Length: 400
Image (cartoon, rainbow, N blue to C red; front, side, top):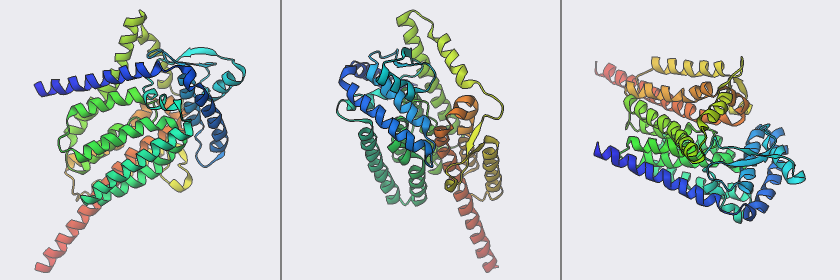
């Protein structure tokens, strides 16, 4: 009990240090980063013309990068983050209108912590958005190579290979063209490395992960901070179904708790019930219309063609059934079930934020990195297990 309280206290202190850092960063004069933010917005606009007509439709990625620049070139309030726009959600055109014609109104964007400012705003003093993306993704690539090297040294060749492929498909390209992915991808990497290298993993690690994700992320592919590290633990047989459920609850509870923490602070400081206003915003993300749930086809050659989510669930269910039939697996049954449960996490997220996932399918599909990772481990374990069983039968037959 004492160890649990001590771990919880450490997490609470670290999170409050993040808040203090955010308060300090937001006090960097907006005028000092204005020129690089302005230059960055025009760069985003030029990129959007190419990206929108290219193989990956990432228009909303550019849109989100634009609102981040908009916030950092104007905002000096830690809790009441705001930008200048028309309230339509079309942040790139609104930001361009503000820069070119000074048209627009001050709009609150309080529903996020906007902790990404800690990573980006100080660097905007001397770099533009392209340089920042490049710097962080080079650092990410170096860190990834180091982790893959550690895995190969321990002869975890399959794990190193599948993570290399998934990162090359889902992470590296996204980070080079969109700033908003970088915080969640950095968190995913740090937690993955921690779970692989550390022998003792406690619930407090996932408590921290959930709270840190909601603090730094911009609602992109946040489930990856839980799914990828958890899958590494399962693959290494250092966790089972109980730990998966326990850590999943810890992650989800702290994620929601960090949101509530901000709303409590704001309600106390400003004498207004921000829970009601937040509920209205959440309902917009929660709402849905018929046939609006989208899923990304696994076929990379088809440029992640977006299809109805039921097709994706059908594919996942088929793989689950096939691997269960072949379940002469090196994994215990609990770990096998846990792998399949984690593979469904992105679908659950899509279901909870149905309309948000539909509108922003250009980048919410990246959460499926966790699903592909889960399926790859299941198939590999079952194939290896089936091979071992066949070998044993062959040896037995020779003896007889």
